Length: 361
Image (cartoon, rainbow, N blue to C red; front, side, top):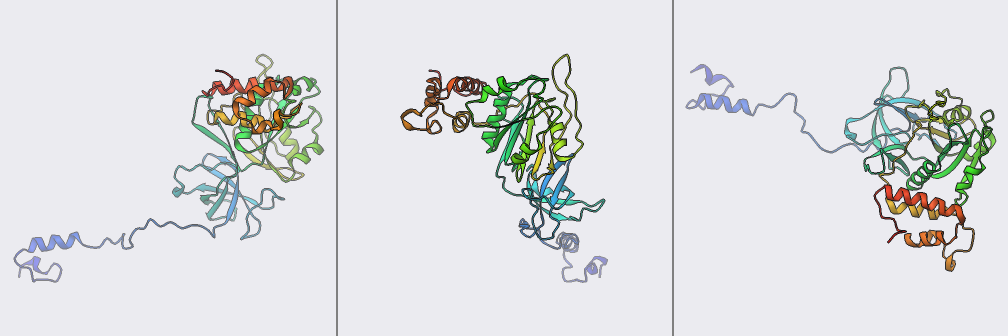
C-alpha cells in the first residue's frame, strides 16, 4: 500500500490516489464557517429607546429613560440620563441627527467608559434642513422631530436682515415647524420698524433687552415643546439659551468693522429649559440655502400664515388660492402694503431657487 492510500483512511480508490486526496481537501468543512450566513436582521422591537441630544465626531449623546423598559420623553419633564452611543454598521449611510428617536443595544448604563450602539432610527415627524446655496440640491439635515422654530434676531448690532428671516420662515414652513420670532437687544434700537415688515403674517413675537431676558414670556412659548433656535451670528442666541437653560455655551461679540458676529457654536445640542421643554441650539449662520425646498411650497407657506386686512376675494381664503391667484390678490391689497413687500421677497427667493415666477408671463 502506498503512503497516500491511508491519508483519509480510505484505500478504495487506488487508481487515482492524488485526485482522491485533492477532492477531499476541497470539500473539507471550514472550521470558522460552520453556521450558514443569513440576511435576516433583528427587528430590535424590544431594544431600549432614546432621544439624540447631540452629535460630536461620530459619538452621540442619547437621552434614555431613568426607568428601564420605558421610553425617554423629551416633551415632558425630561427625566432620564444621557449616555454615549455610536452608530451601528447596519445603518449604513443613514444619518443620525440631534432630535432623532433611536433604538439602542449594548451598554446603556451611562457608566464612565460605556458605549451603546444605535441600531434603528424611528420615522421623523419633522425635519429641518438647509443647503449650501439656493442652487445646491444637496441638503444638510440640522434637526429632526422639533415642534417649533425660535428665530432670534437683534434689533441692532448686528442690523436685522428681513430677507434672512424670510429664509428661516420658508424653511420652518417646509419642515412643518411653527415659527416664533424673538427680537433681542431692544434697548439698543426700537424694533417696531423691523417688525412692521412681518405685519401681514401671523407670527408669535417675543422681545428681549440685552440686560433682561423675558423668562415668563418665553416660558409660555417653550413649555412642553422641543424648540430649535436659529439666528445670524452675534444676535445673542447663545446668551439667550444660557439664561434659559443654565448652560455655559460660548458667547461672542460683533466685529465693529464688519458688523458681523463670530461663530461661537459649532454643533447642535439639545438643552433642558429650566421651566420645562427643550431648546436645540444650532450654530449661527450668515446664509441659509433653500435649494432643497420645492418652489411651490414658498407661496403655500406664505398664504397659510397670512393675516388678511380685508375680506378674501369671493370669500375664498388666500391659502386655498392657486399660486398665480396669490400673487394677484396680494398685489390687489388683500394683505396690505407689507404683504406686497413679503411677496416680493418670496418671489426673489423663488427666482434664486431656479423656479418660475408665477407673477410674470
